Length: 334
Image 1 (cartoon, rainbow, N blue to C red):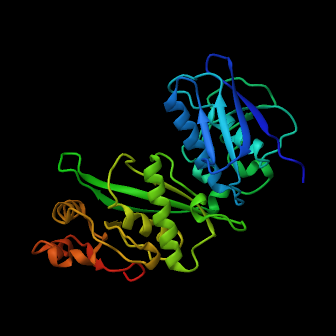
Image 2: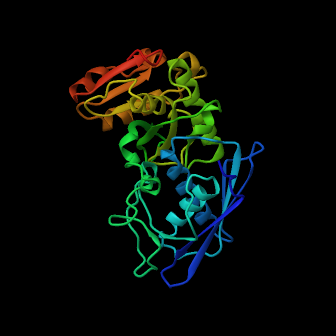
Image 3: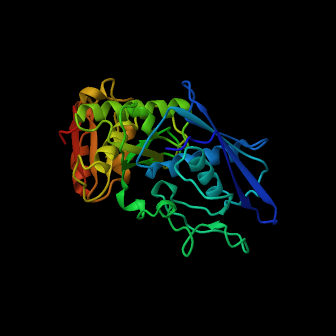
């Protein structure tokens, strides 16, 4: 096996005809983040780059967290330009040896579904004949880089909903989606294979710890998946999302039966590794919000400790809407 490069470079054409350069470097991780992105004077762009890379890594069957990859971009594209996304993805793959082109790479393409490995299209009008252009008629999915089938077929995704309650007009149900892809690897930490783009570091850690603990409870859930977790609204506080997160993960991994409608859940745990479901604050307002937005076919999961505190008629009202309710002490018993 050839030695991996320490640096890789890709280019992308911008709307004004100029060329943007993406540089990826690799170094020992040493307990640092596995990916770091930088764009001078444009923190929002750097965050978008980071999210693209984390999502695009999802359909890589092999996982190695020993190195850190640092990715930079030499200029700031237009506010609405996204054609640079493919160049960032390819630079990240090149420096890790996942993609080994024969020569320099010029790439244009964007995607709304990087976690599926699919490329939606490209915006550049004219490009050199050897340019890598994403989308139908070009590089439709990342598996084509190595002659593999569309990796999206191996991705399993599921959503669950939890109440976002702050006592204002913006109270709503928020979804959390877990996408899993079969992982071939030896050793490594479970939490390293879980990406949570869009959340701050504290939120990412909470998600990873909850999923790793709940999978430990499964006995067969560890070391098998590369996972991406996304939230419909990433700006929230508290841990009442945890039960919905765990349920979405169990649905995606085939550990639960799909309900006719949605799973709506709220709860946390101080011991997910034991499968225990603990209560969270706000029983009355959260149950009222859930009841207001429940529809036929929904399955509502609440902590068992809330059962005696439910408002009179809550169960009947939910049943009248065609939704079912279960107050649970542990996962796997719903």
